[in-house]
Structures are given as C-alpha cells and as structure tokens.
Length: 252
Image 1 (tube, one colour):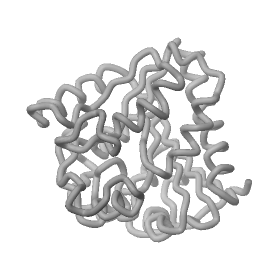
Image 2 (cartoon, one colour):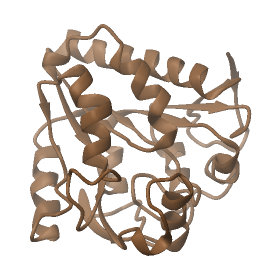
Image 3 (spheres, rainbow, N blue to C red):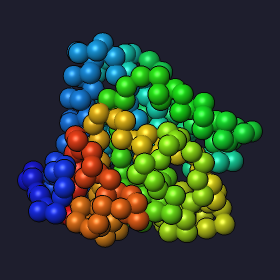
C-alpha cells in the first residue's frame, strides 16, 4: 500500500494506491468495517449507503466477510433504474440482495423501487427514510463520465435542494452499463433512474470510494485535479470532510 496525494486537492481526501482490484477491495472493506464498528460502539447502530457496479464487487465481497454485528446495521442504496423490477438481473436491488443483503442480513435493507407507479413519489418516500437519521458511511463510486450515484454531469447539482430525485441518464452513462455487461445493447438500458443526489451523499459522515480499472483513469484525474464543478460530479469528493479514495495502478 502507498498513499498518494495531489497538490490541487482542496480538502485533502485520503488517497491510497494498490496493485490490483482485489487488494484495493480488501483495504477498502477493512476501512469500511472500522467506520461501521465505531458507529456501533458509539451510537449502538449504524446506517450505511451501499453502492453497486463492477467497481464495488471486491469491496462488497470482503466487507460481507467482516465480523460485524450486522443485526444493528440499517442499509440503503444509491440508485435504481426507473421501470425495471427488483428481479431484473441488471436491477441494483437484485445486485444488492444477492451480493450483500443475503450474505450479511442487516437489520433492515431499504430499497429504491424503480418500478413504483409514481417514481417522483418514490423519491420522496426514500428521501424521508434517509433523512430520518444520520448516515455513517456511503460507498461512492466514480463513473466513466465522472458521475457519482446516477448524478451525471448534466443533472448533478452540488447544492441540490432534493435528497433523492428522478434523473435522465446521459449517453456515456448508459453506454457504460452496456460495456460492463449489464445490458445487451444501448436500447435495453433504461433512460431514467432514481438517485440519491449530491447533497444527499454529502450527508454521510464518511465516504469510501472504490475506483479501480484503466477506464476510470480520466474520471479520477478530473475528479482529483480538475475544476471542482458539477461538470465532473466526482470532484465533489474534494469537498467532503472525511473521504477515503482507493485506486489501483490502472485507475491512478
């Protein structure tokens, strides 16, 4: 492990470089388990926001093996496609249920219902759950276009008045879902999603950002060294007071 830094980072997130995705995920899981454990010790419970996608696979696998009192952890997730069921293989509810919930059995697992008849009402319902208590930890990946959750550049708002909102996905984000193997072609990717907003993410006391692979290198560079702007939503990490960023050699 080696720490790396950038002179242009404004609020000095903690950055760590690892040789490969699995070592990265193991370290990120260890940091996450420590944060959750401290919340359990100090408050008696913990509330976390779980991210999905290929970049989170190793982190979630190692975290699920951690010896934590999951019966005192309440979990949420960051986003979901509008119009697909929780049983759809590309659904984030399916991803979290099979890779996280069924492995650790948290006290509660709250899902964004992408197939709710009124997506805007669903966003309000979910926001009320998030706002009902503190969020100790959010897993925040960075997409190829710099998105965090489904806050693509054209919809990201660092001062968003909403906690959860309905968004239209941009073409780069939709293409990433195809390249990662979640959908067979662009036409199959939903055009809309429900997402925790930038301000909703900032409510979390800690961020753990797992960002491996060469295809993320440009987004990582823009997030850490470019302008702090919604044009690169990932740059918001430099405003967070307690963010940990885990990179491998390719993404760094």
